[in-house]
Image (tube, rainbow, N blue to C red):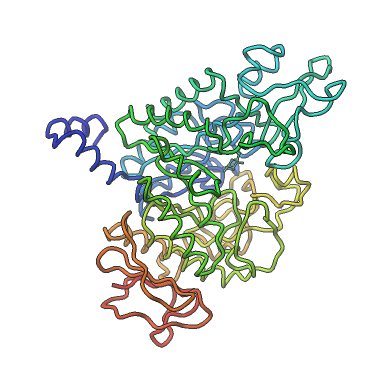
Length: 560
Ligand code: NOJ
């Protein structure tokens, strides 16, 4: 049913507008969806150039529908020089030619909708590409011009302006400022980039910037996007004084400032003007729970990613406390909790859970530590069942369902991530979680590219993935893929597993045991010994074989 028909029905038989709206909000798709993250570059390559594309995704939509997901989040798909894998956008209203065309995106959205799948796109409002028309115009314009006012241009410090305007460092390493030069080589002003130099920060005090992004939202909502994932959502506004961080300025000059909220209130008004089921989802790395939930006050965002859950160690006490805190802080603002195990920025969780230290932090990405992949896989199976039993929305990063591990040791000359480049290799970066998916066959490209494709996949796939292809796992009841398919199907069918209450049951230490709905119970054993199961009528799903009726370590079970 289209949006318009849907609205028409509601007006034909109104209980009252308020009651109808409240019922809609309670049932909104983004409250309980299983959201699959497609990293287009690495999903499926239809034309053999070694890079995934939108026709590739279209061909695999039946696979995603059968997996049992309700929405897809696409990483940025816009024209981009790819200095940061598409997070450097040159044009917010078109599609990167390597990925396809706007017509491909339209067809993809329509086909996803026909399968009942919502589409979430990624908007990057903090920065654009240095090839974006506005930044090119700013470079060509004079200091003090309106063109430069849409970014953060400042004179340098020191006698000849050769020192950056302040001491801010780029999140990717190195200074957060780059000096521009005139055509004749004369050095000029500096511009701010919290990420790579190819990603100049927008100046959100500029009304033009605000108007532009509201228009970009409308552009994609008009094309059928159901949701927006907002990149670096807490970084947009800056203290115009640009104080040195060494002076310990309060509030922070660019993180989570109070003035960012009015931007999202305006975005919410745009979303609401489309009938109320378009979702705004923030990428927020904010440790303070109160400041985090502020983004859901006053009609701002609908939801955000749960990074504390992703970063938690495989440890019952820690997971339990993250779960409790998540539910506690989301309840008063009526936002659905979300649960994320992996994404395109972090080491894959099979690998994380196979290390001695299973916790994760963006600032401590370190490859080369011993990894027990078998153990990590076992835990990843249990983690999936834990995650899918929790109340709220869940994210699946492409390849989670195949049990892919982090690819460590990619040859330096093939690495693409600016983090690796800008830290001089001290941080391995994020290429290892972005390796193209294995679909079929015994050797690379594993069906990622068509047979006989002229180009190799843009990052090399390990030979060891031959046992992890979709083809190999399909129909194997012990495979990760079939576990995901079963768990997502049950999660969809069992109303008790949607957003709603959960109740902890008394359990042994290092065991997570909770009930959802009237009768579904999830038990996860994170201890070193097998544990007995509570009384049950039926085992609905299990991540591992029971041992003499007991749940072995690093395993999960759903009971009725
Ligand atoms: C967060 C994105 O997830 C990441 O991939 C990107 O590099 C930064 N934001 C900068 O846009």
